[in-house]
Length: 245
Image 1 (cartoon, rainbow, N blue to C red):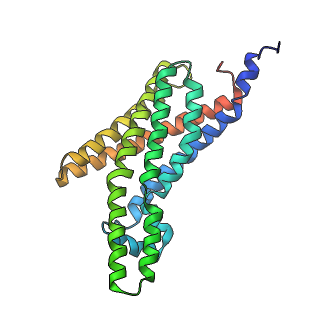
Image 2 (image 1 turned 45 degrees about the horizontal axis):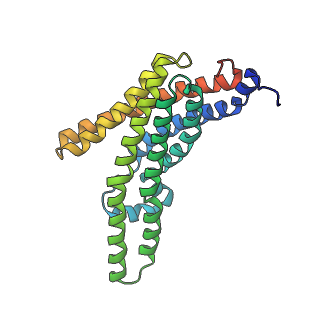
């Protein structure tokens, strides 16, 4: 029969992954700041033609307006979510499993309906078109892709991942590994995100829209606090591996 695995050996197996999750979290925090800068600096476009113009002038700026930084952040959330699951699974295995699966579903929904690169391709074809009829076809296709992005890519995925943040952070409240500030920041980030989406689509009035934007901003602030504190803690676990995980 094989030798039993010693606890310290088992814990050390996760050392590198905790560090990876911690570094990923800190990079996500930087990307969140970048998203605020993008929203403040880059022009807002509402029609396919306006987006085509942005892509023509600067393809990178065009992709940034379609949440390129968010795409990168979602990819980095994968090692972070797994590291959090490993760290918290003994505190709330079922809730962590559901929350982690929900998060991956949210990521899949975002990438499945994010049309950034499709619109980039259409903008290039529009620029190369030689007749008004061809340009009209590409504009119509671009407007369809834009509608798909606005209605699905952000709305569905954001609600799902916000719910996942709430679930994962609720387990943090019961854990001795993460402090309560980290847990409450995650809960508030998820709750604010869900409220923002509900408000944005509950009414078309300008006042409600502005109110929903304030909740989006609050969600980003709380999420920034959450990923920084969680990331630092995970990195510390990776450096020490003394938490008995």
